[in-house]
Length: 57
Image 1 (spheres, rainbow, N blue to C red):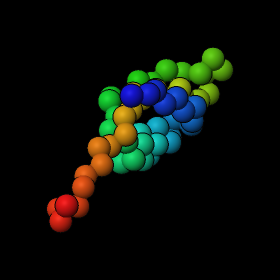
Image 2 (cartoon, one colour; image 1 turned 180 degrees about the vertical axis):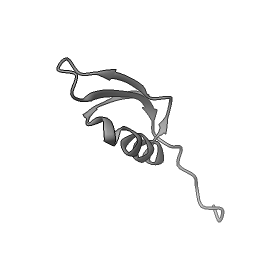
Image 3 (cartoon, one colour; image 1 turned 90 degrees about the vertical axis):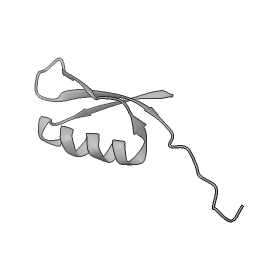
């Protein structure tokens, strides 16, 4: 398990959250403003998706 931090524009938060959720097994996103208040810090706890073996094995 690992944590991902992204600093982005507020308008990009949903798109980035969904993209990361598609790539990893993620928990709920936590959002905090940056110090300058112009962008958002987005934190997600993530894990690699389990790999599945082909059914023929």
